[in-house]
Amino acid sequence: MLPINLADKLSQFSSHWSPRIVSGFNGNDVMVVKLKGEFTWHSHPDTDDLFLVLKGILTIRLRDGDVQLGPGELYVVPRGVEHCPFAEEEVHLLLIEPAGTPNTGDVATAVLKEFI
Amino acid sequence: MLPINLADKLSQFSSHWSPRIVSGFNGNDVMVVKLKGEFTWHSHPDTDDLFLVLKGILTIRLRDGDVQLGPGELYVVPRGVEHCPFAEEEVHLLLIEPAGTPNTGDVATAVLKEFI
Image (tube, rainbow over all chains, first blue to last red; front, side, top):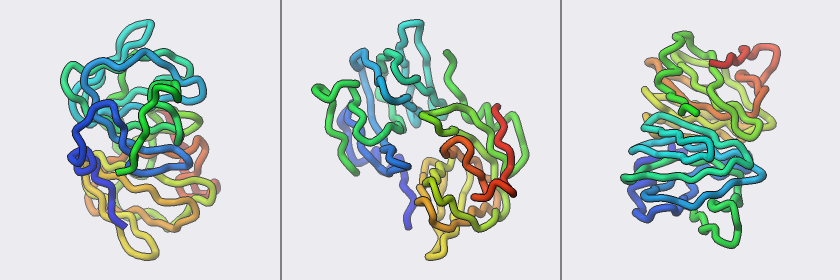
C-alpha cells in the first residue's frame, strides 16, 4: 500500500507526448505525461479532457483563444471541443481520461499508453 | 477561458472536511478540500476514491494498514474498501468523485459540497 509519487513516475521516462498510466479510477486512466512543442489539433467526441500542470507552463490552444496553465492549475476541455496543447519548454502534466481514449482523438494515430 | 488555480481556490475557505467543487469531468466533481484531524471510517460501494495531496501529509487508514502521502502523491481507494483519512496537521487535497457521492459514504451524514 504505497502512494503513487508523480515526480518519481515522471523521472522514469524522457519521451514527449507519450502518456504513462500510473493508476486507475472508475475505468479512467490516471496518467502522467511530458510535453514539449506543439501537438495536433484534435477533439474527443465522447469525453472531457482533464489537464493538471505539475511543472512548467502549458498552453491549450482553443478555436476561441488560448488558456495558459502553470503548476497547480487545471483545465477541463469539454468533449467535442477542438484543442491543441503547446509547450515552449517541457511541461509535466497529470491527465485523466477514460481507459482507451486515443490521445490524438483518432485511434489510427494515437500512441499506446504504457503502464509505469 | 481561465485556468483553475487550486491554491487560489483553497485560499478562499478555511473549514475542514468540506470539499469545494472547482470543476467537472464526465459527471465527476473535481474538488479541493482541507483536512485536519480524523474523519470517520467509511467506504463508497459504487466508486473508487482518488486522493491527490497538494500540501501537507495525509494518512489514509485502511483495515490492512496505513498509506501516507505527501505533496505530489496520489492514492486511489478502491470501491467498497473501508478507509479513514487522518491528518495530524492541515493537509490540502484534490479529490475526484462522481457528482453526488456522499463524503461519508452515507447521504444522511454527508456534507453538502459547495461550488467555489
